[in-house]
Structure formats: C-alpha cells, structure tokens
Image 1 (cartoon, rainbow, N blue to C red):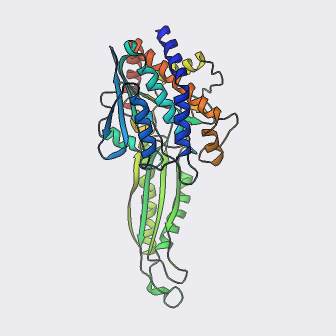
Image 2 (image 1 turned 90 degrees about the vertical axis):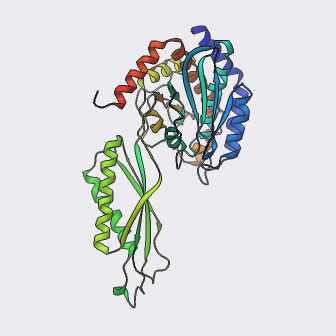
Amino acid sequence: MEKIKQRVVLLAEKLKEDIFDLADEIHKNPELGNQEFKASRLLREKIAKYGFKIDDVEGLPTAFIASKKGAKPGPTIAFLAEYDALPEIGHACGHNLIAAASFGTAAALGSLEDDLAGEVMLVGSPAEETNGAKVLLVQKGVFAGVDAAMMVHPGNRTTAYATSLAMEAIEFTYTGKAAHAAAAPHMGINALDAVIMLFNGINALRQQLKSDVRIHGIITEGGKAPNIIPDKATARFYVRAKEKAYMLEVKEKVIACARGAELATGAKLSYQNFELPFDNLITNRVMADMFKQNLKEIGVSDISDEEEGIGSTDMGNVSQVVPAIHPHMAIAERNVAPHSIEFCLAAGSEFGKNAALLSAKAMAMTAVELAAKPELLEKAKQEFIKATSPSL
C-alpha cells in the first residue's frame, strides 16, 4: 500500500501543469451556476485523456459523471468538482481550485492503471453557490453505488474536520392594495409594511434561538414610488442551523412571523423556496483522520484540529447518503474573507494552486488507503450509519 501511495503522489506531481492550467482557465473565465459551459467542457476534455468514460446528467447540462474502473476489485470513490463563480467578484469562493484538485485526484488514481482498485468517479457539480446541483444528483441516485465521497474547499486555514449548516432559502411575498400615499392612504394595504414587520419579527425571534442559528435576508421588491402605497413586496431569507431538524423548527417560527405580519397589515402572504434546501454536512471522522495524516506525510504541518464551517453547502446532502469529507485547505498566508476580492485573488495565486495540488495528493492517498484496507472503509461506513441513524 505504501508503495502505491508514494506512486500516486508522484503521478499527481506529474499532473501539476494540468492542475494549474485548469485552475487558471476556470479562474480567468468565471461562470455563474448552471452556466459553467466552458469549465464543464474543459474538465470533460482533460479527464477523458486519462481513460475516463464521460456521461451526461439529464436536466443538468453543465453536470457530468466521469468514471474509470480499475483492474482490481475495490470500492467506488467519488471526487466532486465545483466550478461556479459568484456574481461580479468571480471565483471569490475558490471553486476553480476545487475543480482542479478533484480533477488531479481522479487523474492520478486513473493513471495507476493495473494498480487501480475499484472505481474512480469525478462528479461535475454545478451551481453550489445557488441551487446546488448535488441535491439533484443525490435525488437522481448518482451516489447510490458510491462507497465514499471527497472534495477539498479553499479556506483561511487547513482543517480536515469541516462542518456546515443546514439551510433553507425562503421567499416571502405580500400582496396588498395600491393607493395614493398622501391623498388616500386609508384605501391602501401596504405590502412593504408587512415585509418590514417580518424583519422586525425575525429580529425579535433571534433572542429565543440557539447560537448556531443564522437568519439573514434582503428585500427584493418594495414598491415603485414613495407616493404609491406598495401593493407588492418581496423578501428572501436564508434560515440556517447546525442540525437539519432544528433548522426546520426555526423555519416554522420564521413562517409564523410572516403570518403575523400578514394578520397585522392585511397584506396577503405567499411563500416558496427559491433555492433547493441544503442538509448539514456530516464529516466522516475516520476518513478525515486519514486525510489529515496523509497531509502530514506530504509535508503539511499547519493543520487545525478544530471544526470549521458556518456556511452551507450541497455537499451536506451528499454526506447524508455516503461517507464523506469536505476538508478546508488554506490558500493564503494570511486570513482573507471568503466571497471577497482578496479571496478571489488568492484563488488565482501560486499559493492557492499549490494548495489544490496538495489537496489532490492527500485525497488520492486517502483513496488508496480505503481501497487497500477494507477494514478502514468498513469502519467509516459504520460511523456513517451511526451518524445518520439517530435511533442507533
């Protein structure tokens, strides 16, 4: 096993130019969710050169599944590639590096040829920043035969034990009645007042919530002119919590606030999800421990033992159906805020690209271990069963 681990590290090193070029090309050509046609095509073309079979995903034109079976029996391990950017600030979440790292991992493992055990999958996963495609990929059964799943996310520090919050995205719309705001205010029903009361209700609600809850929203429509009572107003909120069950409880409390505003103002309420719900991420600690040790073996020493992650990701949905890890890898020497111009610059830097290469090496080594030691994979699966079955 150790010889194969060393070999896969050398193979990943040989892929350095491909990994860096991929990271650069995606970084220079940012595309929004479900519009990542260049990135998807580039990834398909590059991974096909290593003998991978490419399949489309119905209904998701920028998603794909690339797979290669080994000469020996073993587990099926999936590596997830993200490649969508943010509006205006491009790859300020570093998804170009995620794509490059997962590609590098899959290509290195695929290059093992006769020493490849099991099956390697590179899963192209669009739109993580919005309507996360991994939710749909899970629903479509893409991970039904997968034994383990991995990806590495750029971050401020390196940690194997990332977490994320469960999240629902809710749009509230109030319909009132327009009237002249000065001449006939008594004849109107103010939809914007209802939205403002909703915000105030949620602000009052926060005092009674657990510390891991995050509720944040914007007004997307609030009227047309100051002298017209708004007959329509809309607000969008993200509701998040560490555990899905509690997040759903909080969601109902938020909806109750919305109904209270409806009752108080007379504006009619309607609401819907404007993005797919994300489950909380369950990090498989057996796999995370392996990944951390493999990072150390390739010379990474500054590794935090703390859990990190207060955002939300559709990788959480994957982690609910298969043992999974979603480590964070530092892409700059100093702290830079995600979703900022500085983070975007870090995602295009030599430091950032080297982080993608290190991620690819450590993921490939972890996959080799899982294939070579069935007892470790079984231990990871038992942990997964316990984590996803509260009654056990």
